[in-house]
Image: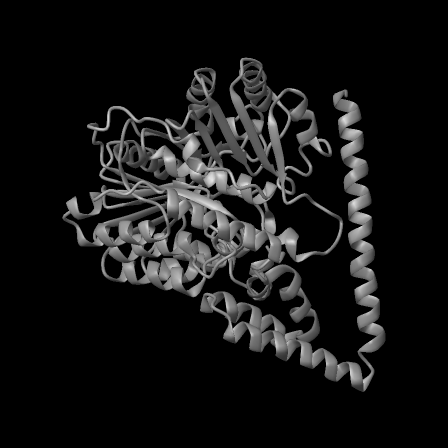
Length: 505
């Protein structure tokens, strides 16, 4: 199929989907406006709103997430209640929940046990690692841990590692788009599949909706590449569409793994320019720490295909275990439970900081827990610096991001906007000793609604590279002043309204 034909089919697909969804919204709206004058239906609408609020109060959920939905339902009982049912509730189809529950148990059953936590003197780090271990992810000694300060810096090592694959390649991404980056990777995957290497490729159907032809996974299957489009898009307003696979994972033979913020599209390696320079990051792991990435991929694969593969068949014999470059834990966060792993890791890092907390994030939509933690850290003398984009990819979200500036700056937090373009990296660095690199944004969707993953690092030598990268970013960024924020009125009535619907953004 030619590129022109693919684009034509894609546009037809989007047009039909948009029309069908618009019709559903129109029908619901007409029914609401037609019936709202009826006393009986007024009572019914109120009952729906009250019922959803009661459900929210009783639910095991982060208080800040519940409060913002309760406010929305208070002002718009029926509409707010229906929005929560379809867009805010984290629980999709029962079948999918049960499948992932089963796979999380598999992860716990197949984790490699060790006594590394007891060898660490810092009680705060012990607590963080114990928390992650209780979620199913053991710490390992770091072995050749490499930090990449951009997508293009990670690209060449990724291609080299893929070419060296001998047994299997697992890849899982949120966005995949036909272009230079993906075609370079696809050529290698085709070659490896022809050589007998087991190649599995997974992409999020909604994340790649405007990027790939319909049912592209069938095209990949023709090359011997086993493929899945996660949670396929259907043009129906559905709760199932709310949980997306935002993870970025590459595993080669179980001994080399990649993760970070970059997807498989040309802007992530600055082959094309969309919002100025695209600032991203990545991480490459070797050795036992890769096992957690392998299990994360298999859990998504098995849950989606409803299979029960034995994880242990992909556990390699690890060598060079005497190498000890700090400690590494790769972990995941699921929207299908009441545990906000990504947020808790971030909160622990902020609350335990003594000297500094450096953060890069494309979006800054904070709940009360994170905002209070950041303010408390700055108040006790910690140097808190947050870098956001100067050129946004989503203007509405950018307005909400900027609405937080004034209060944060007033409490001594330094806010920088990355002047060359768009920051997509999701990095935390604390006190020269610990960091995270991954996919988890500081917004409601990443923290509560998406499947995510991260890599926690303690005392690894690559933290020096991360700090150097942060210093370079600070130098290239503009620090916002309190005078600028006040004069430009970043938090007006419109921004306050946007905060109310923040979980939908």
